[in-house]
Figure 1 (cartoon, rainbow, N blue to C red):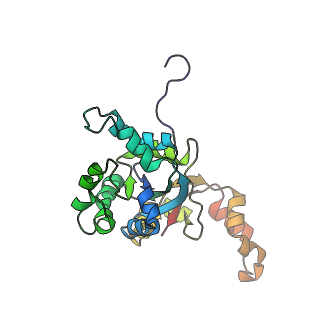
Figure 2 (cartoon, helix red, strand yellow):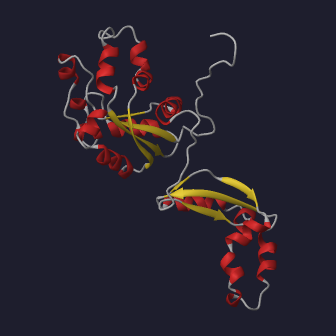
Figure 3 (cartoon, one colour):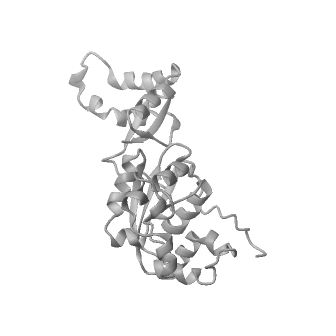
Length: 261
């Protein structure tokens, strides 16, 4: 390519893909009705699973997903591999989801999913417990092995696969407020240097902490946050609540961090 902006492959910016992975429940998982069970196994292993989405796979999406195999001319089945991929994916339903966890999530997820060949996947892995196919049978029938689920190999793979399946330019958002709340570390926690300790204790209790931000509080934010105190003056009849709030918060530094169980 020449002229114009060079292609970087960074189809999604501003997301820490060292902590996010893309889960693809393949057409065989959908056909066998195993998608919810697979995602529950991933969630039970300590990962936060969000943004479930059912789509019909387009050929180009499967080609991008298998780009490394398609580009590997040493593979014996290279001549027929594009046809195998199209037969397995094009026009077929798949289920996508995102997994969030600590850095290194990709290796831990691959271990949970198990060996590419379900007959070699150990018990306790997704493919070991739920797989019903083998590489040997797949090769004999001239098709891809049906091994239920894929996850991105590394942060760059997660970035590419997020753009492939969820669409370039879409922002990661936590929108399920039945499962997400906001932690406000107040000015006294910031002043005493306790923010990390507070959030570590919340994380140790099983919550996933994400998107920490430092904020200098504006008066209206404290007023909205404590609206019930301002409205019901009978709670503290001996105090000037607006003045107390302004004194405690206005212009002070706080830290915010959404968390999910």
